[in-house]
Image 1 (cartoon, helix red, strand yellow):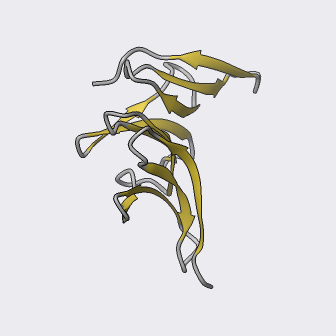
Image 2 (tube, rainbow, N blue to C red; image 1 turned 90 degrees about the vertical axis):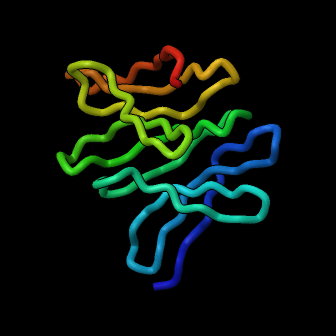
Length: 123
């Protein structure tokens, strides 16, 4: 199997692009393309990682599949991954981050109904 993608999903004013690709083994990874250099983004211990958005400060957000089978949002700032989740909810996805480091995404409730949310600042 040859690699698939990349699939870009976010770009900032500096021309940095984030997205996803599938490697030759079929695993999904997030990526950052900055100044012609690709960097793979993988949340530690995740089954897969998808990068969705990036702001001008270089903060990246997205989603990953945890070892427990649930989907979680994440932020990646200064080399540190932070899980973003809604308390008592098992599936959260983060799609964008603005200049104020506020995030937007979706989550599913116990009745499998999708809701949007805007989150507080990520540092």
